[in-house]
Length: 299
Image (cartoon, rainbow, N blue to C red):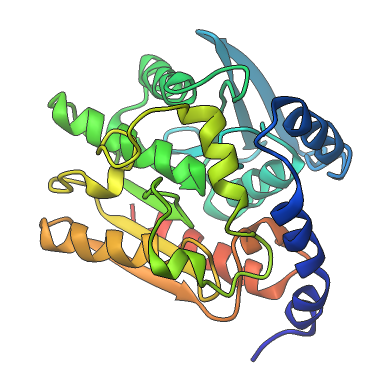
């Protein structure tokens, strides 16, 4: 049953969608103004007093650490956040990290990677991989780690898995890709005719242009959906029914299965891209978090 909060969001969010469609985010200065504005719209104090938060300098970026004081540290989640490669870590992601830590009993490590337009491809990918390698250097084994990426963070996460596989390295125990952006060409019919209440189809290409510049977008290293997808760890692939990236999730699940990679596909009914950021406010987001927690408890 659709919650009243979700019904209300469908009324309120299209205003933001319309603004995304007309805003000149392809302009660097305009993008930086949007970033400055958005940083002022997130609520402070997402970390409860009974949680530990640490910041580690790793290479050219930082790795954030979240843990409840009662949690053991032998198994962890490595969380790569989204936001179109152009917006950094904020309290929306922090709230997810805190709730995942509380409900799974696993600490969270999260790379606060470099972002565009100041830093272009492959900066975010390199920082995220450096954070993962640093994590291994702290004594964690790959089987102790679940990789979790949302939106553009899902792109980075899948790229990392493919790189590790090609290097012959042991992969994490499992991976969660939530509304992952895996086809950067963004040319498919479904993308332009999605019913997403929040994301305008003109907006992601503007952000991607800042990060990927003039690279060929149909190449597997840029659009990992087109990669050889064999040999991946167990996958939970999720998207919203109205999600602008739903078709990325559906195709990825199909292509990975055909390549022999076990995965579970969940299309959450009625929701749009980024719904999961509204845990505690949106019952459908809480339900998604519960699915993720139950998946993590298998490993």
